[in-house]
Length: 438
Image (cartoon, rainbow, N blue to C red; front, side):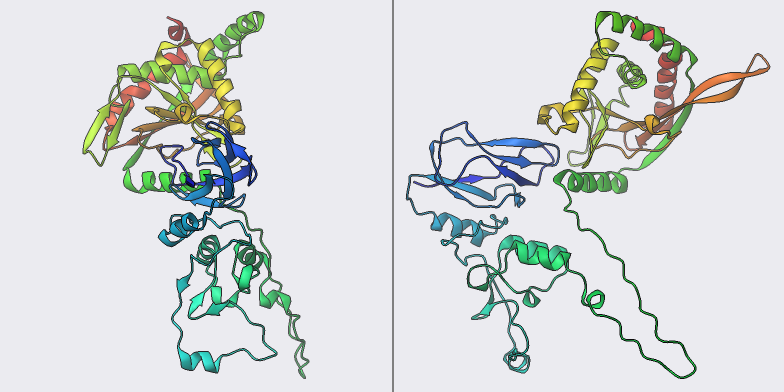
């Protein structure tokens, strides 16, 4: 009996996945646990394993196709077994929203009815000199689900597209060609006409653009942070920290780590540890507002997420139980997680379950900024660059080092005084970093 392979939910925020590479060919025998494809989620690229033995009868989507959770990816079964019923069932239900791979067995099972006005159809019927577009047969427009989705996303009328698939079916590449094609205005050469007493008409130059497919990660960032910004009442608290002792202490610690072959400790590691210690003392900052449940969760554990920039956006690997770890261990874990994050090799448990988040743009020369809360966290700390500035000490102006940090708070969880007390504790640990070692 043929077995459908569906798109699994690979992360807590995943809504669809993209098949970036097939690792098995049609007709190939596979066993339970074999990897048949690589799938890009909103967080990482992960291996897709099968749970049954059999022959890969059908790869139901092309590489690069987006498939919703529960959508059809492939079909397993016995050699020579008919899979048309499974393909038809998923296509007709709308679950198989990714484009089927073209083959001689492709069936038009995913078309949608198109209302046709007979009078208009007669009046606009193509002549020999006008190309036929958008195959319509018996009131039905033949197109693949992915082609329809791409057309809808870009506002393209399918009836104006010529299909290159079987029987004129509109497929993904037809829509992509239409998206990437220059507009008719850009293609037409401007006509110059001279007028007595006036200069010739100037041609208008239209700029071009490059179409870039939005990654699953970028879609998730857009959805989640929009939801956070517009549903969580943000307010912001900023502190300017004296960094002279932190700079000196870090230098001494790295002399030791270098001798012992350990990972170098960064200023971000100091801040992670300082926040973890402060979160242990201020439970309402280490909390989440759970709107659906109508509850505030005060977390027993301290799990600090660190925003890491990657090509597709950012991801937040988590240092678990950060309050119980030393600076050397935090430095080593942070370095490893950041490297694997940039390689898109993190597992779901490594980027989920945080109770607090930090975001550092100091290395880019940004003095201060505000960050959007990473739901369901109650707060996020934005970290700026260490600045050389004149400061007043004992009535004299001397050279000093300062760093601004800004705490974004969800006012449903954290009040102004609670956030201020938290920042006071963070200031204490950073300005006197020897306390982090006690």
